[in-house]
Length: 127
Image 1 (cartoon, one colour):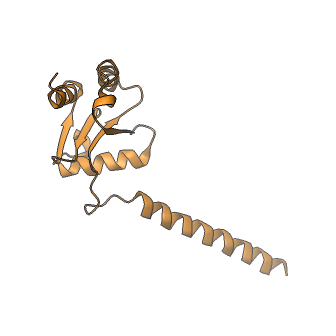
Image 2 (cartoon, rainbow, N blue to C red; image 1 turned 135 degrees about the vertical axis):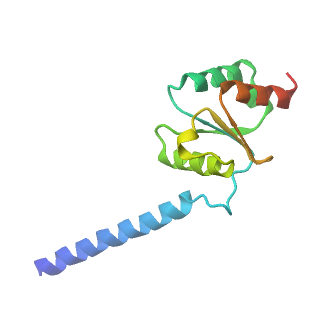
Image 3 (cartoon, rainbow, N blue to C red; image 1 turned 45 degrees about the vertical axis):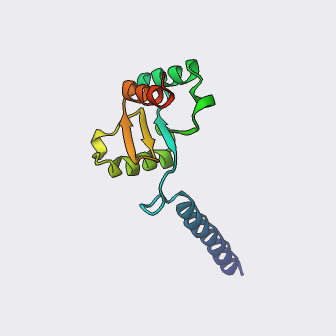
């Protein structure tokens, strides 16, 4: 009886883990068929260049003028993986990718570095 109960418990746990793994991969998959739309700013907490971009965004009230999403990559593996996949679309190797990194989904363009990203927003808003 105890062996059967342990087996059923083990089978239940395994089933739950397998189902949750399947759905987490499905939900987080980012394939070439699934494009990031719009503008996405990838950043890292504590990154000084990212801080400079964030300061510009706040001072210029960019979020009130342009819709874009932000994804932190130092502590979020899914976001880091998405960054790498987007960077590959632009021809970057893994060791060439850093933050801040901006993906312009509308134009399928990658922009890297604080000054180029700040200039992107300035040009978009004619500042």
